[in-house]
Length: 555
Image (cartoon, rainbow, N blue to C red; front, side, top):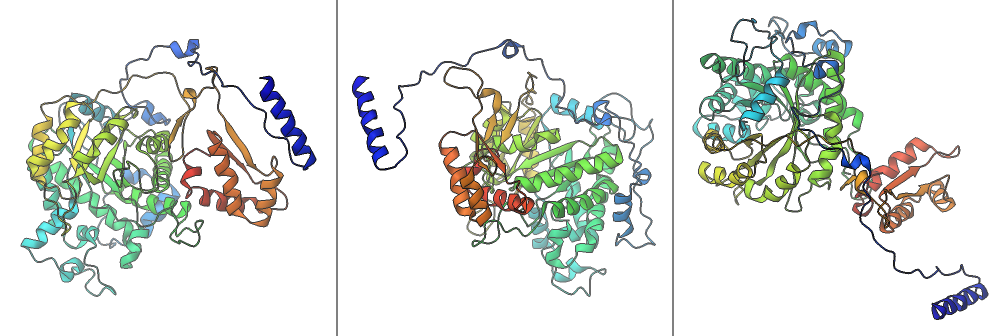
Protein backbone atom coordinates (compact mmCIF):
# COMPACT_ATOMS: atom_id res chain seq x y z
CA UNK A 1 0.00 0.00 0.00
CA UNK A 2 2.81 2.41 0.88
CA UNK A 3 4.51 1.79 -2.46
CA UNK A 4 1.25 2.41 -4.34
CA UNK A 5 0.60 5.52 -2.30
CA UNK A 6 4.08 6.87 -2.96
CA UNK A 7 3.84 6.22 -6.70
CA UNK A 8 0.45 7.93 -6.77
CA UNK A 9 1.85 10.99 -4.94
CA UNK A 10 4.73 11.20 -7.41
CA UNK A 11 2.24 10.98 -10.31
CA UNK A 12 0.22 13.82 -8.76
CA UNK A 13 3.37 15.99 -8.45
CA UNK A 14 4.28 15.31 -12.09
CA UNK A 15 0.77 16.09 -13.25
CA UNK A 16 0.80 19.36 -11.29
CA UNK A 17 4.09 20.40 -12.87
CA UNK A 18 2.67 19.71 -16.36
CA UNK A 19 -0.59 21.46 -15.46
CA UNK A 20 -2.57 18.30 -16.04
CA UNK A 21 -5.49 16.98 -13.97
CA UNK A 22 -4.46 14.59 -11.18
CA UNK A 23 -4.57 10.87 -12.05
CA UNK A 24 -7.30 8.65 -10.73
CA UNK A 25 -6.69 7.24 -7.28
CA UNK A 26 -5.77 3.55 -7.18
CA UNK A 27 -8.58 1.41 -5.90
CA UNK A 28 -8.62 -2.01 -4.40
CA UNK A 29 -10.75 -4.84 -5.71
CA UNK A 30 -14.42 -4.19 -4.98
CA UNK A 31 -16.18 -7.03 -3.17
CA UNK A 32 -19.19 -8.45 -5.01
CA UNK A 33 -21.96 -9.69 -2.79
CA UNK A 34 -25.17 -11.51 -3.58
CA UNK A 35 -28.32 -9.48 -4.06
CA UNK A 36 -29.92 -8.53 -0.76
CA UNK A 37 -33.50 -9.75 -0.53
CA UNK A 38 -36.16 -7.60 1.07
CA UNK A 39 -39.61 -8.57 2.31
CA UNK A 40 -41.23 -7.56 -0.97
CA UNK A 41 -38.93 -9.97 -2.80
CA UNK A 42 -40.42 -12.83 -0.80
CA UNK A 43 -44.06 -12.18 -1.71
CA UNK A 44 -45.25 -15.43 -3.32
CA UNK A 45 -46.49 -15.32 -6.91
CA UNK A 46 -50.12 -16.20 -7.60
CA UNK A 47 -51.44 -18.37 -10.45
CA UNK A 48 -52.66 -16.31 -13.40
CA UNK A 49 -56.24 -16.87 -14.49
CA UNK A 50 -56.00 -14.67 -17.62
CA UNK A 51 -53.47 -12.46 -19.41
CA UNK A 52 -52.80 -8.94 -18.06
CA UNK A 53 -55.87 -6.80 -18.69
CA UNK A 54 -55.99 -3.40 -20.40
CA UNK A 55 -57.06 -0.53 -18.17
CA UNK A 56 -60.44 0.10 -19.81
CA UNK A 57 -63.61 -0.75 -17.90
CA UNK A 58 -64.85 -2.87 -20.81
CA UNK A 59 -61.75 -5.07 -20.66
CA UNK A 60 -61.60 -5.32 -16.87
CA UNK A 61 -65.29 -6.21 -16.64
CA UNK A 62 -65.22 -8.52 -19.69
CA UNK A 63 -68.00 -6.56 -21.37
CA UNK A 64 -69.01 -8.33 -24.61
CA UNK A 65 -68.50 -6.41 -27.83
CA UNK A 66 -72.07 -5.65 -29.05
CA UNK A 67 -70.91 -5.73 -32.71
CA UNK A 68 -73.13 -2.73 -33.45
CA UNK A 69 -70.56 -0.50 -35.08
CA UNK A 70 -73.20 1.85 -36.47
CA UNK A 71 -73.45 3.26 -32.94
CA UNK A 72 -69.79 4.34 -33.04
CA UNK A 73 -70.14 7.97 -34.08
CA UNK A 74 -66.91 9.55 -32.90
CA UNK A 75 -65.93 12.30 -35.33
CA UNK A 76 -62.63 10.63 -36.26
CA UNK A 77 -64.35 7.33 -37.06
CA UNK A 78 -67.15 9.11 -38.93
CA UNK A 79 -64.64 11.10 -41.01
CA UNK A 80 -62.98 7.92 -42.23
CA UNK A 81 -66.30 6.35 -43.19
CA UNK A 82 -67.34 9.55 -44.95
CA UNK A 83 -64.44 9.39 -47.38
CA UNK A 84 -64.98 5.70 -48.16
CA UNK A 85 -64.72 4.68 -51.81
CA UNK A 86 -67.49 2.09 -51.42
CA UNK A 87 -70.30 3.12 -53.82
CA UNK A 88 -73.28 4.76 -52.13
CA UNK A 89 -75.62 2.29 -53.85
CA UNK A 90 -74.02 -0.56 -51.90
CA UNK A 91 -75.52 -0.45 -48.42
CA UNK A 92 -72.64 -0.39 -45.93
CA UNK A 93 -73.33 -2.97 -43.24
CA UNK A 94 -71.17 -2.51 -40.15
CA UNK A 95 -73.30 -4.43 -37.62
CA UNK A 96 -72.67 -8.11 -36.93
CA UNK A 97 -74.56 -8.91 -33.73
CA UNK A 98 -76.17 -12.35 -33.50
CA UNK A 99 -79.35 -13.47 -31.78
CA UNK A 100 -78.57 -14.28 -28.15
CA UNK A 101 -80.29 -17.65 -28.43
CA UNK A 102 -78.54 -18.74 -31.62
CA UNK A 103 -76.27 -21.24 -29.82
CA UNK A 104 -76.10 -22.64 -26.26
CA UNK A 105 -74.51 -20.38 -23.63
CA UNK A 106 -71.69 -22.58 -22.37
CA UNK A 107 -68.18 -22.88 -23.84
CA UNK A 108 -67.30 -23.96 -26.54
CA UNK A 109 -70.23 -22.11 -28.11
CA UNK A 110 -69.93 -18.41 -28.86
CA UNK A 111 -72.47 -15.79 -29.88
CA UNK A 112 -71.44 -12.28 -30.94
CA UNK A 113 -72.95 -9.60 -28.72
CA UNK A 114 -73.77 -12.09 -25.96
CA UNK A 115 -70.42 -13.56 -24.96
CA UNK A 116 -67.12 -11.95 -24.00
CA UNK A 117 -64.50 -12.77 -26.62
CA UNK A 118 -61.76 -12.15 -24.04
CA UNK A 119 -63.22 -14.86 -21.83
CA UNK A 120 -63.67 -17.19 -24.79
CA UNK A 121 -60.09 -16.79 -26.03
CA UNK A 122 -58.82 -17.40 -22.49
CA UNK A 123 -60.83 -20.63 -22.29
CA UNK A 124 -59.74 -21.72 -25.77
CA UNK A 125 -56.03 -20.96 -25.30
CA UNK A 126 -55.88 -22.68 -21.89
CA UNK A 127 -57.69 -25.83 -23.04
CA UNK A 128 -55.88 -26.50 -26.35
CA UNK A 129 -53.25 -25.17 -28.72
CA UNK A 130 -55.40 -23.04 -31.02
CA UNK A 131 -54.79 -23.08 -34.76
CA UNK A 132 -54.12 -19.98 -36.83
CA UNK A 133 -54.10 -19.99 -40.62
CA UNK A 134 -51.21 -20.01 -43.13
CA UNK A 135 -49.85 -17.84 -45.91
CA UNK A 136 -52.23 -15.79 -48.04
CA UNK A 137 -49.57 -14.83 -50.63
CA UNK A 138 -48.52 -18.45 -51.16
CA UNK A 139 -52.13 -19.49 -51.79
CA UNK A 140 -52.64 -16.65 -54.27
CA UNK A 141 -49.48 -17.73 -56.11
CA UNK A 142 -50.70 -21.32 -56.17
CA UNK A 143 -54.07 -20.18 -57.51
CA UNK A 144 -52.36 -18.21 -60.31
CA UNK A 145 -50.49 -21.36 -61.41
CA UNK A 146 -53.79 -23.13 -62.05
CA UNK A 147 -55.89 -20.17 -63.14
CA UNK A 148 -55.40 -16.94 -65.05
CA UNK A 149 -54.48 -14.19 -62.59
CA UNK A 150 -52.75 -11.46 -64.55
CA UNK A 151 -52.97 -7.68 -64.68
CA UNK A 152 -56.48 -7.83 -66.13
CA UNK A 153 -57.79 -10.03 -63.31
CA UNK A 154 -56.13 -7.88 -60.65
CA UNK A 155 -57.82 -4.78 -62.09
CA UNK A 156 -61.27 -6.32 -62.51
CA UNK A 157 -64.07 -4.07 -63.69
CA UNK A 158 -63.60 -1.46 -61.00
CA UNK A 159 -59.99 -0.67 -61.84
CA UNK A 160 -59.85 -1.57 -65.53
CA UNK A 161 -58.66 1.95 -66.45
CA UNK A 162 -56.24 2.37 -63.53
CA UNK A 163 -53.22 4.58 -64.22
CA UNK A 164 -50.48 2.14 -63.15
CA UNK A 165 -49.80 -1.59 -63.03
CA UNK A 166 -51.40 -3.31 -60.05
CA UNK A 167 -50.41 -6.95 -60.50
CA UNK A 168 -48.88 -8.07 -57.21
CA UNK A 169 -51.25 -5.98 -55.09
CA UNK A 170 -52.80 -9.03 -53.45
CA UNK A 171 -54.93 -7.01 -51.05
CA UNK A 172 -57.00 -5.51 -53.88
CA UNK A 173 -58.19 -9.00 -54.84
CA UNK A 174 -60.64 -8.69 -51.94
CA UNK A 175 -62.42 -6.11 -54.13
CA UNK A 176 -61.78 -7.39 -57.66
CA UNK A 177 -61.70 -11.18 -57.15
CA UNK A 178 -63.56 -11.82 -53.87
CA UNK A 179 -64.28 -15.46 -54.78
CA UNK A 180 -60.51 -16.17 -54.81
CA UNK A 181 -59.96 -14.71 -51.35
CA UNK A 182 -63.04 -16.34 -49.88
CA UNK A 183 -61.94 -19.65 -51.37
CA UNK A 184 -58.58 -19.36 -49.59
CA UNK A 185 -60.27 -18.45 -46.30
CA UNK A 186 -62.54 -21.46 -46.68
CA UNK A 187 -59.66 -23.86 -47.35
CA UNK A 188 -57.85 -22.80 -44.19
CA UNK A 189 -61.03 -23.20 -42.14
CA UNK A 190 -62.28 -26.48 -43.58
CA UNK A 191 -59.15 -28.32 -44.68
CA UNK A 192 -56.66 -26.74 -42.29
CA UNK A 193 -59.05 -26.62 -39.34
CA UNK A 194 -58.04 -23.09 -38.28
CA UNK A 195 -59.80 -21.60 -35.28
CA UNK A 196 -58.76 -18.11 -36.34
CA UNK A 197 -57.97 -16.69 -39.78
CA UNK A 198 -56.13 -13.49 -40.69
CA UNK A 199 -57.63 -11.04 -43.14
CA UNK A 200 -56.14 -10.28 -46.55
CA UNK A 201 -55.12 -6.79 -45.41
CA UNK A 202 -51.39 -7.05 -44.70
CA UNK A 203 -50.60 -4.00 -46.88
CA UNK A 204 -53.96 -2.22 -46.75
CA UNK A 205 -52.67 1.10 -45.43
CA UNK A 206 -52.47 4.45 -47.19
CA UNK A 207 -48.66 4.29 -46.89
CA UNK A 208 -48.28 0.85 -48.50
CA UNK A 209 -51.00 1.51 -51.11
CA UNK A 210 -49.11 4.58 -52.35
CA UNK A 211 -47.05 2.18 -54.50
CA UNK A 212 -50.21 1.56 -56.54
CA UNK A 213 -51.68 5.06 -56.20
CA UNK A 214 -54.58 3.52 -54.22
CA UNK A 215 -54.29 5.43 -50.95
CA UNK A 216 -57.96 6.46 -51.10
CA UNK A 217 -59.06 2.81 -51.10
CA UNK A 218 -57.51 1.87 -47.74
CA UNK A 219 -60.82 1.78 -45.86
CA UNK A 220 -62.55 -0.25 -48.57
CA UNK A 221 -59.68 -2.75 -48.80
CA UNK A 222 -59.82 -3.40 -45.05
CA UNK A 223 -63.60 -3.48 -44.94
CA UNK A 224 -63.87 -5.99 -47.78
CA UNK A 225 -60.99 -8.12 -46.53
CA UNK A 226 -62.63 -8.46 -43.12
CA UNK A 227 -66.18 -8.80 -44.47
CA UNK A 228 -65.25 -11.74 -46.71
CA UNK A 229 -63.56 -13.48 -43.79
CA UNK A 230 -66.57 -12.78 -41.55
CA UNK A 231 -68.95 -14.38 -44.04
CA UNK A 232 -66.87 -17.55 -44.45
CA UNK A 233 -66.26 -17.89 -40.69
CA UNK A 234 -69.99 -17.65 -40.00
CA UNK A 235 -70.71 -20.15 -42.76
CA UNK A 236 -68.24 -22.71 -41.35
CA UNK A 237 -69.28 -22.07 -37.73
CA UNK A 238 -72.92 -22.76 -38.62
CA UNK A 239 -71.91 -26.28 -39.72
CA UNK A 240 -70.33 -26.98 -36.31
CA UNK A 241 -71.30 -24.44 -33.61
CA UNK A 242 -69.05 -26.22 -31.08
CA UNK A 243 -66.03 -24.94 -33.03
CA UNK A 244 -66.63 -21.21 -33.64
CA UNK A 245 -64.21 -19.45 -36.00
CA UNK A 246 -62.87 -15.93 -35.56
CA UNK A 247 -61.65 -13.14 -37.82
CA UNK A 248 -58.26 -11.66 -37.00
CA UNK A 249 -57.74 -8.22 -38.55
CA UNK A 250 -54.20 -8.36 -39.97
CA UNK A 251 -52.23 -5.12 -39.55
CA UNK A 252 -48.90 -5.25 -41.39
CA UNK A 253 -45.75 -3.17 -40.78
CA UNK A 254 -46.04 -0.86 -43.87
CA UNK A 255 -43.06 -0.38 -46.21
CA UNK A 256 -41.62 2.52 -44.22
CA UNK A 257 -39.90 2.49 -40.84
CA UNK A 258 -40.09 5.00 -38.04
CA UNK A 259 -36.70 4.27 -36.49
CA UNK A 260 -34.45 3.44 -39.45
CA UNK A 261 -32.99 6.09 -41.74
CA UNK A 262 -33.47 5.63 -45.50
CA UNK A 263 -30.31 7.70 -46.06
CA UNK A 264 -26.77 6.46 -45.44
CA UNK A 265 -25.58 10.08 -45.29
CA UNK A 266 -28.06 11.25 -42.65
CA UNK A 267 -28.88 8.86 -39.79
CA UNK A 268 -31.50 11.30 -38.46
CA UNK A 269 -33.54 11.24 -41.69
CA UNK A 270 -36.92 9.50 -41.71
CA UNK A 271 -39.40 8.97 -44.54
CA UNK A 272 -42.39 8.73 -42.19
CA UNK A 273 -43.37 10.24 -38.84
CA UNK A 274 -44.97 8.56 -35.86
CA UNK A 275 -48.13 10.65 -36.31
CA UNK A 276 -48.40 9.63 -39.97
CA UNK A 277 -48.13 5.98 -38.97
CA UNK A 278 -50.82 6.42 -36.31
CA UNK A 279 -53.19 8.03 -38.81
CA UNK A 280 -52.72 5.34 -41.45
CA UNK A 281 -53.15 2.55 -38.89
CA UNK A 282 -56.26 4.17 -37.42
CA UNK A 283 -57.93 4.20 -40.82
CA UNK A 284 -57.04 0.54 -41.28
CA UNK A 285 -58.45 -0.35 -37.86
CA UNK A 286 -61.78 1.37 -38.56
CA UNK A 287 -62.10 -0.54 -41.84
CA UNK A 288 -61.27 -3.87 -40.21
CA UNK A 289 -63.72 -3.43 -37.35
CA UNK A 290 -66.48 -2.18 -39.67
CA UNK A 291 -65.85 -5.28 -41.79
CA UNK A 292 -66.53 -7.58 -38.84
CA UNK A 293 -63.09 -8.39 -37.36
CA UNK A 294 -63.11 -9.97 -33.89
CA UNK A 295 -59.43 -9.50 -33.00
CA UNK A 296 -56.70 -7.08 -34.10
CA UNK A 297 -53.24 -8.47 -34.86
CA UNK A 298 -50.20 -6.20 -35.32
CA UNK A 299 -47.96 -8.61 -37.20
CA UNK A 300 -44.57 -9.18 -38.85
CA UNK A 301 -42.97 -6.41 -36.80
CA UNK A 302 -39.41 -5.63 -37.82
CA UNK A 303 -39.43 -2.06 -36.45
CA UNK A 304 -40.89 -1.75 -32.96
CA UNK A 305 -41.67 1.95 -33.41
CA UNK A 306 -44.10 1.07 -36.20
CA UNK A 307 -45.73 -1.46 -33.90
CA UNK A 308 -46.03 1.13 -31.13
CA UNK A 309 -47.74 3.47 -33.60
CA UNK A 310 -50.20 0.71 -34.51
CA UNK A 311 -50.84 -0.04 -30.84
CA UNK A 312 -51.33 3.66 -30.15
CA UNK A 313 -53.90 3.79 -32.96
CA UNK A 314 -55.66 0.73 -31.51
CA UNK A 315 -55.68 2.42 -28.11
CA UNK A 316 -57.31 5.49 -29.67
CA UNK A 317 -59.97 3.35 -31.34
CA UNK A 318 -60.73 1.49 -28.10
CA UNK A 319 -60.95 4.79 -26.22
CA UNK A 320 -63.31 6.34 -28.77
CA UNK A 321 -65.48 3.22 -29.04
CA UNK A 322 -65.43 1.99 -25.44
CA UNK A 323 -65.08 -1.59 -26.72
CA UNK A 324 -62.97 -4.49 -25.49
CA UNK A 325 -61.11 -5.88 -28.52
CA UNK A 326 -58.40 -8.53 -27.92
CA UNK A 327 -55.05 -7.47 -29.39
CA UNK A 328 -52.34 -9.85 -30.64
CA UNK A 329 -48.78 -8.76 -31.46
CA UNK A 330 -46.31 -10.72 -33.59
CA UNK A 331 -42.66 -9.79 -34.11
CA UNK A 332 -40.14 -10.91 -36.72
CA UNK A 333 -36.53 -11.83 -36.00
CA UNK A 334 -34.67 -11.32 -39.25
CA UNK A 335 -31.74 -13.71 -38.77
CA UNK A 336 -29.92 -16.01 -36.37
CA UNK A 337 -28.86 -13.06 -34.22
CA UNK A 338 -32.36 -13.25 -32.76
CA UNK A 339 -33.02 -9.55 -33.32
CA UNK A 340 -35.58 -7.51 -35.21
CA UNK A 341 -34.46 -5.41 -38.18
CA UNK A 342 -34.22 -2.39 -35.87
CA UNK A 343 -31.88 -4.38 -33.61
CA UNK A 344 -34.01 -5.39 -30.63
CA UNK A 345 -33.83 -8.78 -28.95
CA UNK A 346 -37.08 -10.67 -28.53
CA UNK A 347 -37.19 -9.84 -24.81
CA UNK A 348 -36.63 -6.13 -25.48
CA UNK A 349 -39.31 -6.20 -28.15
CA UNK A 350 -41.81 -7.60 -25.65
CA UNK A 351 -40.80 -5.06 -22.99
CA UNK A 352 -41.41 -2.29 -25.55
CA UNK A 353 -45.01 -3.29 -26.26
CA UNK A 354 -46.22 -4.88 -22.99
CA UNK A 355 -47.77 -1.57 -21.90
CA UNK A 356 -50.50 -2.16 -24.51
CA UNK A 357 -51.54 -5.32 -22.62
CA UNK A 358 -51.73 -7.61 -25.68
CA UNK A 359 -53.60 -10.84 -25.11
CA UNK A 360 -51.16 -12.89 -27.17
CA UNK A 361 -47.57 -12.21 -28.27
CA UNK A 362 -45.27 -14.25 -30.48
CA UNK A 363 -43.08 -14.55 -33.55
CA UNK A 364 -43.75 -15.11 -37.23
CA UNK A 365 -42.08 -15.10 -40.65
CA UNK A 366 -38.36 -14.67 -41.55
CA UNK A 367 -37.18 -18.05 -40.24
CA UNK A 368 -38.31 -21.64 -40.30
CA UNK A 369 -39.40 -23.25 -37.03
CA UNK A 370 -36.09 -25.11 -36.64
CA UNK A 371 -34.17 -21.81 -36.56
CA UNK A 372 -36.60 -20.11 -34.17
CA UNK A 373 -36.28 -22.58 -31.30
CA UNK A 374 -33.82 -20.70 -29.02
CA UNK A 375 -35.67 -17.42 -29.50
CA UNK A 376 -39.10 -18.91 -28.83
CA UNK A 377 -37.65 -20.49 -25.69
CA UNK A 378 -36.35 -17.13 -24.41
CA UNK A 379 -39.57 -15.30 -25.25
CA UNK A 380 -41.78 -17.92 -23.61
CA UNK A 381 -39.87 -17.40 -20.34
CA UNK A 382 -40.68 -13.69 -20.18
CA UNK A 383 -44.04 -13.17 -21.91
CA UNK A 384 -46.80 -12.58 -19.37
CA UNK A 385 -49.69 -13.29 -21.76
CA UNK A 386 -50.46 -16.07 -24.25
CA UNK A 387 -47.80 -17.04 -26.79
CA UNK A 388 -47.91 -17.97 -30.47
CA UNK A 389 -45.66 -18.88 -33.39
CA UNK A 390 -46.45 -19.02 -37.08
CA UNK A 391 -43.22 -19.73 -38.87
CA UNK A 392 -42.30 -20.05 -42.52
CA UNK A 393 -42.18 -23.46 -44.18
CA UNK A 394 -38.40 -23.37 -43.82
CA UNK A 395 -36.08 -20.91 -45.52
CA UNK A 396 -36.68 -19.92 -49.15
CA UNK A 397 -34.79 -21.83 -51.85
CA UNK A 398 -32.83 -20.27 -54.70
CA UNK A 399 -36.05 -19.66 -56.63
CA UNK A 400 -37.81 -18.01 -53.69
CA UNK A 401 -40.01 -21.03 -53.01
CA UNK A 402 -40.42 -23.10 -49.85
CA UNK A 403 -39.63 -26.80 -49.84
CA UNK A 404 -40.84 -28.08 -46.47
CA UNK A 405 -43.64 -30.61 -46.66
CA UNK A 406 -46.52 -30.40 -44.18
CA UNK A 407 -45.04 -33.32 -42.23
CA UNK A 408 -41.57 -31.73 -42.05
CA UNK A 409 -42.92 -28.37 -40.94
CA UNK A 410 -45.06 -29.99 -38.24
CA UNK A 411 -42.08 -32.02 -37.04
CA UNK A 412 -39.95 -28.85 -36.71
CA UNK A 413 -42.72 -27.26 -34.64
CA UNK A 414 -42.91 -30.30 -32.38
CA UNK A 415 -40.27 -28.95 -29.97
CA UNK A 416 -42.57 -25.99 -29.24
CA UNK A 417 -45.40 -28.33 -28.28
CA UNK A 418 -43.23 -30.70 -26.24
CA UNK A 419 -41.86 -27.84 -24.13
CA UNK A 420 -45.26 -26.24 -23.61
CA UNK A 421 -44.24 -22.91 -25.15
CA UNK A 422 -47.34 -22.13 -27.25
CA UNK A 423 -51.04 -21.37 -27.00
CA UNK A 424 -51.52 -20.82 -30.74
CA UNK A 425 -49.68 -22.08 -33.82
CA UNK A 426 -49.98 -21.40 -37.53
CA UNK A 427 -47.92 -20.89 -40.67
CA UNK A 428 -46.44 -18.00 -42.57
CA UNK A 429 -44.65 -17.85 -45.96
CA UNK A 430 -44.80 -21.13 -47.88
CA UNK A 431 -47.48 -22.74 -45.71
CA UNK A 432 -50.77 -24.02 -47.09
CA UNK A 433 -53.92 -25.69 -45.68
CA UNK A 434 -52.18 -29.12 -45.63
CA UNK A 435 -49.37 -27.59 -43.54
CA UNK A 436 -51.93 -26.16 -41.10
CA UNK A 437 -53.76 -29.50 -40.97
CA UNK A 438 -50.51 -31.29 -40.07
CA UNK A 439 -49.82 -28.74 -37.32
CA UNK A 440 -53.36 -29.17 -35.96
CA UNK A 441 -53.14 -32.95 -35.86
CA UNK A 442 -49.76 -32.95 -34.13
CA UNK A 443 -50.52 -30.15 -31.64
CA UNK A 444 -53.71 -31.92 -30.53
CA UNK A 445 -51.50 -34.37 -28.61
CA UNK A 446 -49.99 -31.66 -26.40
CA UNK A 447 -51.13 -29.23 -23.72
CA UNK A 448 -50.98 -25.47 -24.27
CA UNK A 449 -48.57 -23.15 -22.48
CA UNK A 450 -49.51 -22.29 -18.91
CA UNK A 451 -49.75 -18.60 -18.13
CA UNK A 452 -46.86 -17.58 -15.84
CA UNK A 453 -47.65 -16.86 -12.21
CA UNK A 454 -48.28 -13.22 -11.30
CA UNK A 455 -45.61 -11.74 -9.04
CA UNK A 456 -45.14 -8.21 -7.76
CA UNK A 457 -45.02 -5.40 -10.34
CA UNK A 458 -41.66 -4.55 -11.88
CA UNK A 459 -40.15 -1.74 -13.91
CA UNK A 460 -39.16 -3.27 -17.23
CA UNK A 461 -37.37 -0.99 -19.69
CA UNK A 462 -35.86 -1.60 -23.10
CA UNK A 463 -33.36 -0.29 -25.56
CA UNK A 464 -32.04 -2.83 -28.02
CA UNK A 465 -31.79 -5.04 -24.94
CA UNK A 466 -34.21 -5.25 -22.03
CA UNK A 467 -33.57 -4.06 -18.48
CA UNK A 468 -35.52 -5.16 -15.40
CA UNK A 469 -34.70 -2.42 -12.91
CA UNK A 470 -35.40 -4.62 -9.88
CA UNK A 471 -32.71 -7.06 -11.02
CA UNK A 472 -29.96 -4.41 -10.97
CA UNK A 473 -27.85 -4.14 -7.81
CA UNK A 474 -24.46 -2.80 -6.76
CA UNK A 475 -21.40 -4.66 -5.41
CA UNK A 476 -22.93 -4.69 -1.92
CA UNK A 477 -26.09 -6.37 -3.18
CA UNK A 478 -28.37 -3.36 -2.77
CA UNK A 479 -30.69 -1.98 -5.50
CA UNK A 480 -28.73 0.45 -7.64
CA UNK A 481 -29.53 1.92 -11.07
CA UNK A 482 -26.65 3.77 -12.71
CA UNK A 483 -28.04 6.65 -14.79
CA UNK A 484 -25.68 8.41 -17.18
CA UNK A 485 -26.35 12.15 -16.91
CA UNK A 486 -23.64 13.64 -19.12
CA UNK A 487 -26.06 14.05 -22.06
CA UNK A 488 -27.60 16.90 -20.13
CA UNK A 489 -27.16 20.53 -21.11
CA UNK A 490 -27.74 21.60 -17.50
CA UNK A 491 -25.13 19.20 -16.14
CA UNK A 492 -22.34 19.11 -18.74
CA UNK A 493 -20.80 22.22 -20.26
CA UNK A 494 -19.02 20.04 -22.83
CA UNK A 495 -22.29 18.49 -23.99
CA UNK A 496 -23.94 21.92 -24.07
CA UNK A 497 -21.23 23.36 -26.33
CA UNK A 498 -21.49 20.40 -28.71
CA UNK A 499 -25.28 20.69 -28.96
CA UNK A 500 -25.12 24.44 -29.47
CA UNK A 501 -22.59 23.88 -32.26
CA UNK A 502 -24.71 21.10 -33.80
CA UNK A 503 -21.88 18.59 -33.38
CA UNK A 504 -24.02 15.49 -32.91
CA UNK A 505 -21.17 13.12 -33.74
CA UNK A 506 -19.10 14.07 -30.70
CA UNK A 507 -22.27 14.32 -28.60
CA UNK A 508 -22.87 10.64 -29.45
CA UNK A 509 -19.36 9.85 -28.19
CA UNK A 510 -20.34 11.23 -24.78
CA UNK A 511 -23.39 8.95 -24.66
CA UNK A 512 -21.33 6.00 -25.85
CA UNK A 513 -18.67 6.60 -23.17
CA UNK A 514 -21.34 6.57 -20.45
CA UNK A 515 -22.65 3.20 -21.58
CA UNK A 516 -19.09 1.83 -21.72
CA UNK A 517 -18.51 3.12 -18.18
CA UNK A 518 -21.51 1.17 -16.89
CA UNK A 519 -24.60 3.37 -17.25
CA UNK A 520 -27.79 1.31 -17.23
CA UNK A 521 -29.92 4.19 -18.55
CA UNK A 522 -29.01 7.39 -20.42
CA UNK A 523 -30.67 10.63 -19.33
CA UNK A 524 -31.05 13.20 -22.14
CA UNK A 525 -31.85 16.87 -21.57
CA UNK A 526 -31.52 19.58 -24.24
CA UNK A 527 -33.72 22.23 -22.63
CA UNK A 528 -32.09 25.62 -23.12
CA UNK A 529 -33.45 29.03 -24.02
CA UNK A 530 -30.90 29.47 -26.81
CA UNK A 531 -31.62 26.10 -28.44
CA UNK A 532 -34.60 24.68 -30.34
CA UNK A 533 -35.03 21.89 -27.81
CA UNK A 534 -37.70 19.96 -29.70
CA UNK A 535 -35.70 19.75 -32.93
CA UNK A 536 -32.46 19.02 -31.07
CA UNK A 537 -34.05 16.24 -29.01
CA UNK A 538 -35.62 14.64 -32.08
CA UNK A 539 -32.36 14.68 -34.03
CA UNK A 540 -30.28 13.44 -31.10
CA UNK A 541 -32.63 10.53 -30.36
CA UNK A 542 -33.02 9.59 -34.04
CA UNK A 543 -29.25 9.35 -34.39
CA UNK A 544 -28.83 7.58 -31.03
CA UNK A 545 -31.21 4.76 -31.98
CA UNK A 546 -28.98 3.96 -34.98
CA UNK A 547 -25.92 3.55 -32.74
CA UNK A 548 -26.00 0.03 -31.24
CA UNK A 549 -23.42 0.87 -28.55
CA UNK A 550 -25.79 3.57 -27.24
CA UNK A 551 -29.21 2.18 -28.13
CA UNK A 552 -28.62 -1.09 -26.30
CA UNK A 553 -29.63 0.70 -23.08
CA UNK A 554 -32.88 2.60 -22.48
CA UNK A 555 -32.88 6.39 -22.73
